[in-house]
Image (tube, rainbow, N blue to C red; front, top):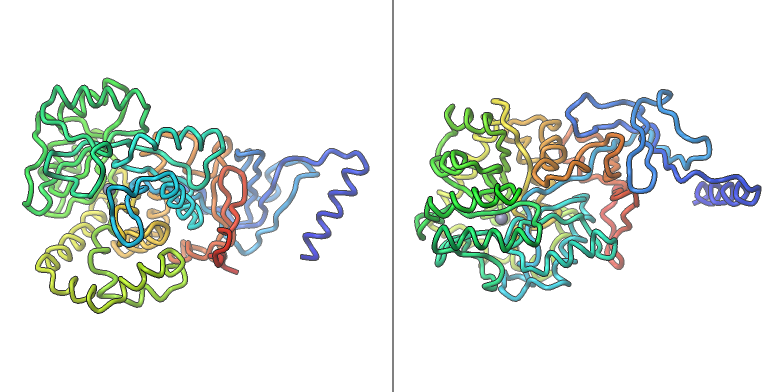
Length: 452
Ligand SMILES: [Zn+2]
């Protein structure tokens, strides 16, 4: 407080003397993980002006104005803001997924929660009402808060099939013919979504999968409109089929079989991005099996008291344990972890996502930090997990502006009390979050997540 007062005093003296105060802010002395995968820089300098990073380097090697505001971060670590390339907005109200949940207020709350947890950008990957475009425009004008939103608009599913989420009819297209699919892609393209989403899954054998002629039409027409396509997949054979037709992103892990050389070759040849969403699979049972994960303040602040009560109830636990699908879900989770390690080692482009917001068990904010831990448990290094969650996920958004801490990029980064390269869960020890060159204030009326 004294220090702050002193700075304010000096500033006012400088202003009174007619000296121009620089609008440059300098973050000095932290260990810098820049998101590119390069070795971290000890005693770094990051300079920002407005919403942009202007200079990055080692202390003593970076020039900045003498009258810049300097924030000393000795002993801290800086890393880029997390980018969730597979999230959802406005699907959950209270403890339920509901068709009437997609409201301005719910979308806003979701974006604020992500931002409070250091997720500075999120792709809302399908199941959006067209309201999303209005809100995205407002956000670009600076009048809508929270994490920077990218969107896949409605997305493409199957009549009486996937996705099996209770949504309003105007939240997802379910084309019956390739022609209808093409027309719907064109209709959506007029809104300029950031990416297109399609679902290719029989949901455990319960529904008909999307017809190959339809997904081919969706991919072709999207590319014609200058849009990339992300596919929800589960099965290895389906992943190969959509890649053969040109899909750009796999939005979930392959969970039925080990990935093979044929798939790896296809993914590398087409530069396909892979989003594992491990927490999506773990969330089916983790709260019943490992209730201790819910004791953490980091988790508790992310869920409402109603949700907490539901997760902790004996009925919920019993439901999970008695679910005949449980062994299969666990096997899918194990397969997803194994496949992630194989693909990362093979040099496939691994990005990052959680499917948070898609249901009450997929807790936005908390899920992203858990996902980083699960990626490391799968055998990735903390650096690989961080690069996936920053630079590689920026690749899914299509925005060249975000993802790394380099001159010209947007000033989106986290200041951590401890080094996540030593222990990945240190990403939870956030001291400050900077988004678009502004420090994110702790949510009004809520206890702060900030570490000391
Ligand atoms: Zn999803």
